[in-house]
Image (tube, rainbow, N blue to C red; front, side, top):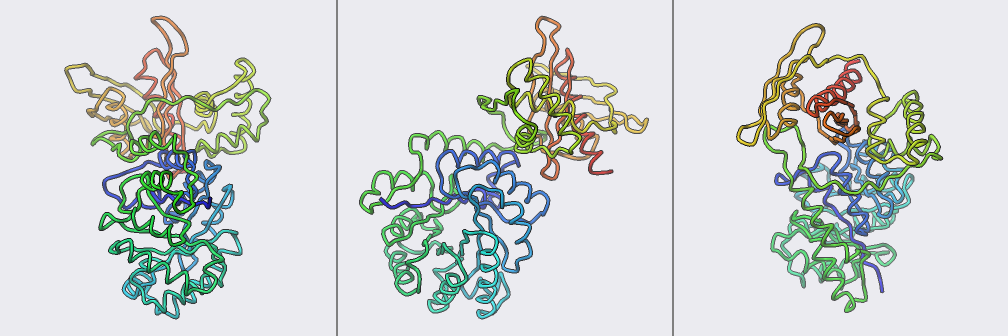
Length: 472
C-alpha cells in the first residue's frame, strides 16, 4: 500500500484561534503527543519574535524524534537563516515556502505583481534548498487563482527544487467532485508533477473538508494537512479513521497509531481547551501527573545530563553546567538514578544563583472550604517594603498572584512541584517553581515545614533569576 502523509497544522493555526490557548510548554507537549501518535509532519508557525519563536522551534525540533518538523519562511527571506538555525538539529527538518497565488490575495498580502511573485518564489525555494533537503511549496488560495498562472507558479516551484507541492482550497467552497477535477487538471498539466509529492489543504466552510481530502487521495494526493482540534480544516481523527477503514479502496494507509488515537485526541483537547482562569497566575489547568520516564544513571557523562536539561528548557552557562553535573553525580551515586523532577530540583538549587533583588519579609494566607483564599505578601527590594494583596482559587494561587501584583509582571508558570523530603508531623516540604520569560526557563527552589512558605520562596527565587538576567 502507498502511504498518505498526514501533516498536522494545529501548532501553526492555534495562535490565531481565540477559543484555544497554549503555553510555551504545552506547545512542546502537543508536538511530543503528535510524534507519539505517528503523525508524519508537525508544522509550526514561522518566526515573528526572534528570541521566543526561535527557542520554541529549537525545543520542538529537539523533542520530536520520528515526525518531520516543518517551518515556513517569508518570501523576502528575512528570517530564513534564523529559521534554519533553529530547525537544523531536527531529526527530519523541512522548510516551507507559502505564497498566495490568487489575484486578490497576491496583491493584498504581498503587494507583488505576478512576474515579481514568480521570481520571489523561485529565489526563496532555491535558497531553502541550499540549506535543507526537504522543501515544500504551499500555493495559498489556489482554487481561486487563474489556471495558467497557477501552473506557471507550480512549474517554477518544481524547477527551483521543491519536493512537495501543496494545493490549498482556502475558501473551502468546492464540492468533492469539483476539487477532484481541479486537482486532476493540475496533476495532468504541470510538468514534473509525477516526480513530486502532491499535498492538499482544504478549508471546512461547507463541512466538506474531510470528503474533499478523500477525493484528493483518490486523485493522487499523498499529503493531507489536518488539525487535531476544530480549526476549520480536515479533522486529523476523522481522516485517520476514514483511511484506516476505507483506505484499501485506494490502496493507501497512514502511519497513525489507531490504538492510541482516542487517548491522544483527548489529551490534545485537554491541552488546547484548558484556559487560564481569570486572575490566576497558572497558565494552564492541572492534569494528572504522568509517569516520569526520564532515568539518568550515575554513569551518564556531563554532555548527556546537560542535553537533557536543555531539552527541559534550561539555558545553562558553562559554570552552571559544572555545578549541575556535580550535584547530579552526588544524588545519582546515592540513588542509582535521577528523574525529571529531581533534575528540576538540582537545577533550581545550584544553577544561576544570583544576588536577591526581592526577599520575602512576611506573608499572611487565609484559606478554607467556606472562604475565598486570600494572600498578603510583603517583599523587600532595596530596603523598601512592597506589599501585594490578592484573592485566588487556592492559597498558592493567591500567593503567586500577590507577588505578580507587587512586581507588575506575569510570567508563564511552566511547572510547580511539591514533595515531602522528611516524614512525620514536622515533615519538610520541597518545592520547585519554574517560570518562563522570553522562552527561557528559570527555576526556583524552596524548602520549609510550611508548604505555602516553601512555594513563595521558590517563586521569588525564580523571579530573582529573571530580574538579574534581564536587567543586568
